[in-house]
Length: 178
Image 1: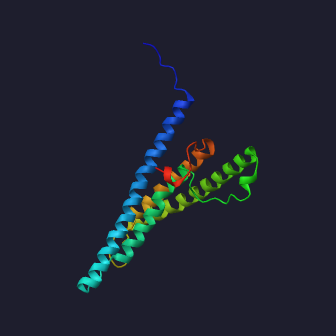
Image 2 (image 1 turned 120 degrees about the horizontal axis):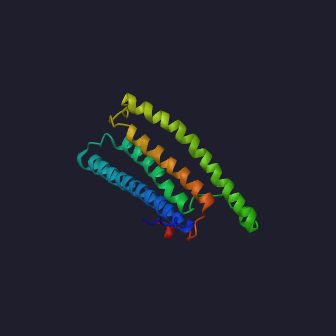
């Protein structure tokens, strides 16, 4: 039996890029679904309020939770495609090497934030799940929302580290985002 040669670095890089993209796209679909859910929820609440004279009780709480999920779930694809907001007034005028160094520094700042966030959010999520905490008015379980936000931020941190090592080579415009 012959041993197979190790995979080339280009193969590993492409495989990891596909993995990050797949995970980020799955979360982006969750985020898009959350935004669509907000639209349907608010539309239903308006129809109920003005059509039947009875407001939908859980609209505000669920809309807030869905908005939180949308923001966190869309972060990984945003960072993966390097569409996150950056102050580039000075960095655009730098030569390539310092510009790259500044970009890597920014990615490490994002990674540090993600690590601290995940560390604290993990504890809060575990505490929330352990006590089976619910939202105040509509009694929605909070743990799934917190776990998803925590996982999304962990993926964002991993992608920030990936982008520090392997910059995005595509067109970083919103039209090419997905």
